[in-house]
Image 1: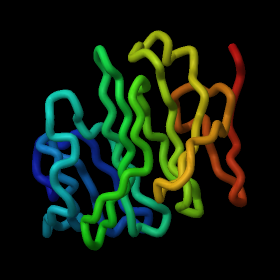
Image 2 (image 1 turned 90 degrees about the vertical axis):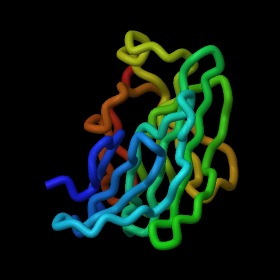
Image 3 (image 1 turned 120 degrees about the horizontal axis):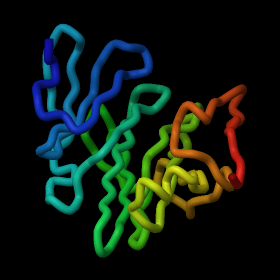
Length: 171
C-alpha cells in the first residue's frame, strides 16, 4: 500500500498511530489513514530547488507538524515551520541564514522544537557532533543551547519526566 502516494521526501506516524504524514517532492504535506483517504494538509513547503522540505515531526498531541526547510550551498539557510494539521496554517518557528539545521523533534510538552545547527554542510564535520538547540515552537524568542555537543542521532536523546537526557561529549 502507498496511502500517501509516491515521491515522498520524508514521512512519519502520528503519535497515536492513527495517521501517516509525509512531505512530497513537490512541497505538499499530506496525510492518510493506513487504509487510504489521502488529504493535502498544506502546500508550498520548500518547492524551489534550493529549499526542499527535508524532514518532519508530529507534535506529541498530534495537532501540529514541524517541517525542516534548510538548504546548503553558498548561503546556508534554516527555516523551521510548524503546520496546524487541522487547518494547514503555517507558522515560522525559526529562520536564519548562515546555518543549516537538522530537525530533531518536539519536546514532550509540545512547546519546543529541537535542532542541530551546522555552520558548514559537511557530513564529516557532522560526524564530530554539534550543539543541540531548542526554539519555541510558536516562533517567539530566540534559540537556546540545550546541550553543548551531541552526535546527530536522535537515538542519543531521550526524555524522562519532561527532562532531556543526552549522550554528550567533546570527543
